[in-house]
Length: 278
Length: 121
Image 1: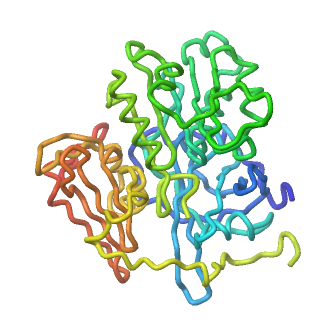
Image 2: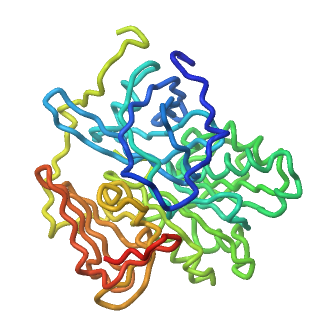
């Protein structure tokens, strides 16, 4: 299911919405699903063609609206996984079994289907290479989605320029239950291997494959002290994941001496926030 | 159904969950606590500039925070945004019966940077 009815998008040449100013309310648009990619047993990436898409910044989200036959509507927020440089918009959605929106998005939608969405939304939890580094990203579960947009944006802009990469050294600490639950695992390893200024640390909290050498526990203060840039380097920190993880990580980072103003959080919840919204 | 056939987005009605939590119960479940950036969508229906990057002064304790850094308690009707310092309500947005309600009494001042004229709540 690929590339049907796709216009040759040119988002890479568009000016991303880098200002907080818009000239009008954010419009609802009709997106077309051009591909569905399985990420984990419970998560799919929807690759969307969105006519008139104004461009986004890494970390922003969209609101998705579903309408039932009787007119009942439900809206949920999903983080954008794709880089602003990509021609298409990618959303990675994790299915919540009792959700009223995510099962439709992960199990029913197919290539050629259409979907109502509005965005890009939110200028607070965003990062671009112009904001510089060092960059420290902390993700739990589907909280990786907006952080992946940041990593993809960083790679797209800095790939050809080693000096520029050194200006934005980046570390990702990513917690998942088990290896099969790690989003984008086929992309993360080569991304880090090809880039000496990017370090990826994974922790698996429930189960690890034989020979696993990464962390094997919930993210804690000791792990953060080991992986994070020292507070004196004033890293820009983005934390995204379930509420308990986000609050534990943010609290620990501040206790370790990080400036609260540099620690931005996005809690993933059932009615808003990012990737795993219902 | 063949791939590519146009289908309207239709939900599984059985899966509908009730938005019955009252406004006063919005803190009953910890899982509903989100960040101010989760409210960016509904706020964009009222404010044209992105309000989550604006800085709000809590009318209760005086703490100044980006609206994106407030704590959001989401419920069926809308969102209640509380000060992360003193837990007072700073901003409420709700969408009952095709109306849109905005309560800013908990925000003494809202300041947006990079705007031609200052935006004051």
